[in-house]
Image (cartoon, rainbow, N blue to C red):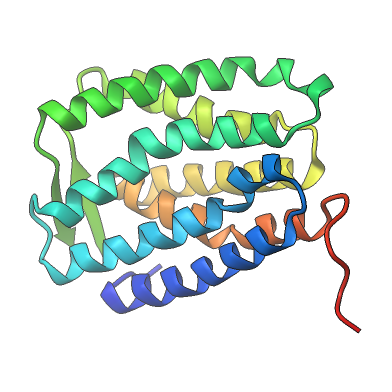
Length: 209
């Protein structure tokens, strides 16, 4: 896996395009947050391209990247899955949602009171927030994001959860110091699964003839 400003920018544009198609495909307003996830992840990769170009450090791009990666995704993913789910299957998503709300609030506080720095390490970027008890925070974050996907009633959403979970393990083993950066990139590349989900939503428009 080789990342650079060009790679992140290219991936971000392609993933954002997938997100635009997903948003256009879903017929129900409650499906929009999950359908828009690739748009968010694509924008995230574009922001990281700016981090590359700025040489890392603690600038606005680094802060914007951290805000999306940490408090925003921790809340967005479980809430999007919950809203898109049928009412009868939402109870199982309560734990990931609660974890997401708590984790998002804690991460937002840490980002507001601590400096975020980005360190370019060869072909990856390491981000440092200096979190207290980082193991607990990461576990709660993964419960909120991956847990919500794995507990979804929709099989395609669960498939996305499995892919992202595998990506988390790979990134943790191979890129331990750059885990957040590489895992977010892996999750963004998995957005094609969201396109499959959006394409199959009830009431989605059929192919043009």
